[in-house]
Image 1 (cartoon, rainbow, N blue to C red):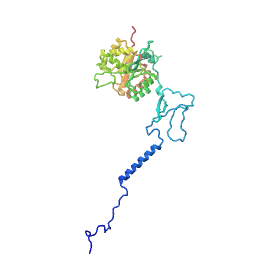
Image 2: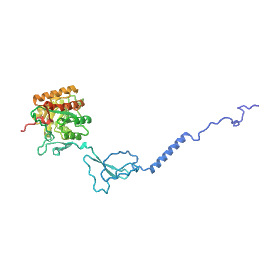
Image 3: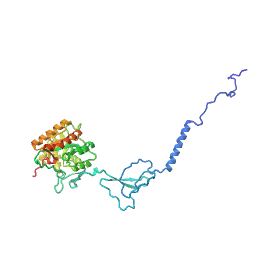
Image 4: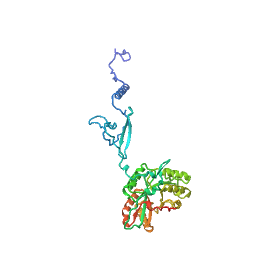
Length: 393
């Protein structure tokens, strides 16, 4: 009698295959691996020699002073400077432009001073005369010294001598908008000759260095003062703009903030300002402050409604105004035509003043023009050589 599957006793027929099982479940394996990692990391933190504890490290290449011990060749680990050798006779003297960085060990509190050499270019340039400075609430600003010296005279550059034609036509050219763009400032400094005057905006990050370099290369300097245009605030010249809605005292305070941004300039010039310069009530206190500080005022010639000429004359402010804006149309051909007009005015009147911005095309055309203008009997002079001086009472 054949036994069917229903009547067969349980567990008697074991001919079926068993399913293989993993010796260890996957979650258990993952947990074990994580545990091993934690244990290994804990052991590493106990025995590893890492005094900085994994903190970020900045490496500075420095000219270490004499007597500094350096690691012997073949030693493991980063190079480090633990201060001057106590056995050294005298500490090394820091060269001009260097900076000292103090490093504090987080675990021991030990202080280390590392001397970082400064840029040689950073120390290049003409110095500022401290007797021509007054400390305001915003910082140092120009003043007339106790012996009567004026910044407009102290920082002026001599006009080139012309033996062949001492009474020949003279041109003063101002390049404005410098100090904000590093590339345009560097381009102007490297290509444009010294008699051309540079006007710096008050918002650059390293103005003192750029101005000192420009003065060292023979350029007179102007401070550009932002003034209110008719479409302000849609067209905003920048922070601390002088506004016709403010009182004279408020605008003078803003002017002093702008004057404190850098030093070494012979005068100030407007940046925009069509509305502001058309208001005698607004502009007069600013020009009186300019005269009080021993500076000249240069009108960029952009606004036909400007009252700067009349107000400057009434307040005995040395004054100059641009007859030609060189790059009102910033193309090579139009810039060249404007420079020709400038030469024509100089021949007719004896002097002429041009104003331009530090655009790459402007810098290139002016640099080329400046090389040839003397061959046409015209002398390039700094702005102070053309500014009208006030008559003494």
